[in-house]
Structures are given as C-alpha cells and as structure tokens.
Image 1 (cartoon, one colour):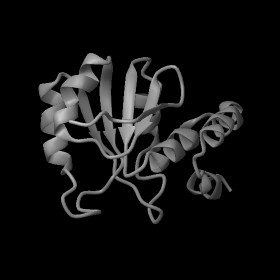
Image 2 (cartoon, helix red, strand yellow):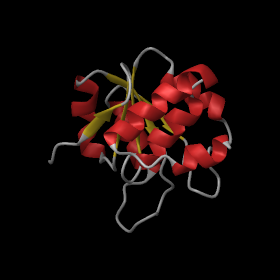
Image 3 (spheres, one colour):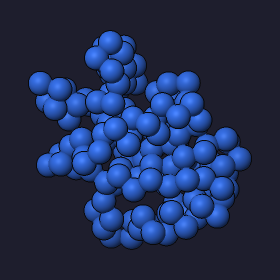
Length: 137
C-alpha cells in the first residue's frame, strides 16, 4: 500500500488526492476523526465509490461525509455543513482527485475576516483557487 500524500491547511484541516479503503486504518491511527469526500462517484474508471469509502472509514472509527462537488455546482448544497466539519476542532481529511476542490471549499468556508489568510495559505502550497475566487465574486 502506498502512502497518501496529505497536505495541511490549518491546525486541524488536511486535504489529499484520491485515497483508498485500505488507507483508513492508517488515517485513523494518524488521528483523523472525519473524512470528507469531495469527489463524485465514477469520475474515472476504477475509483473507489463513496459507499466503499464510507464503510471503510466507519470501520476504522471515522465519520464520513459525502460532499461531491465540481465546477458546475461549487460550493455545493450546504457549505455550512462543510464549515462545521472544518471547524469541529478535530482532525479532518477532505479528499478529491488532487486536493484542489477540497482546498477551494476550505477557502470558501472561511469567514470574510479569515478568508484572505486562508487564500494565502492555499496559494502558498500551490493550489489553484479559481473556484473559490469566482464564487466569492
């Protein structure tokens, strides 16, 4: 099993590219309490489904949130739900194909007072924030 490259955005919020069910035990051992999927099922052939991921996450003792987004429906139906998970104070790992959608959601979920600092963090890592910046107006 290959190691998952995890990128830290804040003290408790991390993002990653596609992870697999077999990564769950290791992620739980790293202290992650919540796993968020920001990737729709079947984006690419062979991608683990949200159902498979949810079952593996729950077996490992983590909660699993289904929050698939793309450029057409950003930031999704309930940004407050994402904000609550990001601000839970517990370690959260959000994943998509590359981590970019997750980083954009995190930036979009930040308060107006905190958004500029979040943009600086995500841009400093190298994320394209066009989804969050277009949505923000």
